[in-house]
Amino acid sequence: MGIVLLAVLALPFFGMKLSLQGIRPDSMSIPQTTAIKGIFVLLVFLRHYKGYVTLERAIDQPFLIVDNKMGQLIVALFLFYSGYGVLESFRNKGEAYLRAFPRKRILTTLLHFDLAVLLYLLVQALAMGRFYDWKTMLLSLVAWNSVGNSNWFIWVILMLYLVSWAAGRLFSSDISRLFAVTACSAVYVLLFRRLYPGIEWWYDTIFCYAAGMWYSFLRLRIERFLSGEVRFWISFAVLLCLFRVLFWYRSNLAVYELLSVVLCLIAVMASMKIQVGNRVLGWFGKQVFGVYIFQRLPMILLEQWGINDWPYLFFGLSFVCTLLLSAGFGWCTKRIDRLLFKKT
Image 1: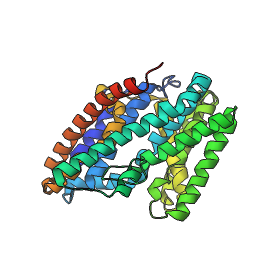
Image 2: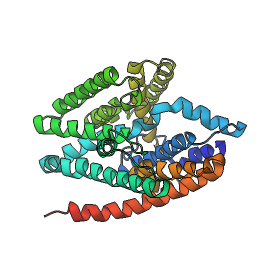
Image 3: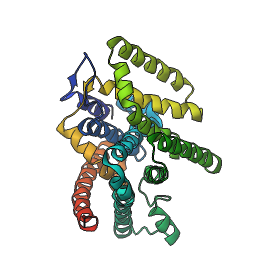
Image 4: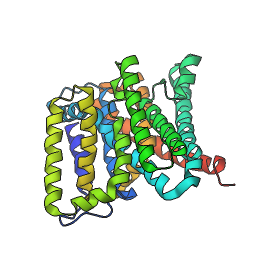
């Protein structure tokens, strides 16, 4: 797996462009953030793959070390970019978008997720004879439970979307909305830490979403400050040092939350100097939902059939099947969305 990890890490260098003077105006553009999300969804695939096979060869050790060090930080940028995009849409598209937000973001996300859950149920019933009780199935449709699929991220993003929409409807100013989302995130963390202490991954990076919204609000002022080369490189060095110090104490929840936000800011600053993008990363970035949701389905089946005894064959088959499922699902949902959510 060390070779696979190396390939994933090398992929961003294809099509990369450096701008060492000044700040790139497209640092937060959709193509740029899409490509970066493509990198991290591949790392998420490798993370989940690791849970189905035994990797003991020396060549696998670099991957295991990197994966262990990354931990939940692997999803931080997904939350950051989501928060950034939501506030950007609120600010640029106005009241009409805010009114349509439950339909365009919340219901669409939930519908796509539920279609994936139903496919999990169908495939496991037909191919494995595995059935779930009604309570598990119903709770899985709102992402609170799982029928083999990954669900916690969908639950978190739906909750954050709901809070963002409520804040948008209750408050007219961006700053009030930002404080409301941040405060609700803090309440969510405190509540889940008290009630569900054993599932810390459900809340230990949640502030990245609010951080993305704050960055949207402060972006012009931040970029003005960083336009000076000396200030940019000093700020970047400070963030790197802060990340390293926080990493030592990451077992503390508050430190881990801050660590995840600092990682996002480092990525944003790197994007100001580096343009990442090629067709492969662009495709994976556009297919984040499908790749994230469906990667476990072929893994479950291949494990049931004993293919996980051959880790590299397991990887190849699960990877190809995930790509096919994601592409097919994306094709279908585009047509379903046009049918159900077309403008009247």
